[in-house]
Length: 160
Image (cartoon, rainbow, N blue to C red):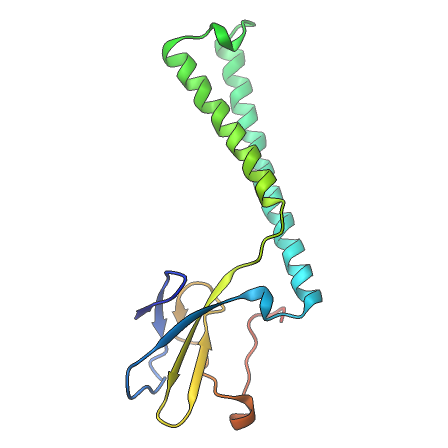
């Protein structure tokens, strides 16, 4: 096991030959590896999924705040609260506000996820492997050399 640039613990493939046991680690932004049209489609899909999740959380926080107000204010303004009740309402309001700000921040373009990359010399050729699962489990990742040399390739996922 080694630690990747992203901070993940990487479990390496036991079949990889590395006589020096020296591993070079790096990271690559996924969108830089895909064609522009695929990158746009994937970013759009991810943005929509994120927006749905965050909107659900924002809605839930607002419902909780509204229910709390109904149960505790009885038509009085929030400024009439004191002590623990004022603190409770403040925390609920802060949660709602923070989630709304998060929603606004996430609506901007996201550069995408980062994959760990491991390179090593197997005694005759340099090889590289990519953690396309984003889990740190590289036990089934192929260690590829230059395509020109070995005519082998791999895909990052089903979409690529």
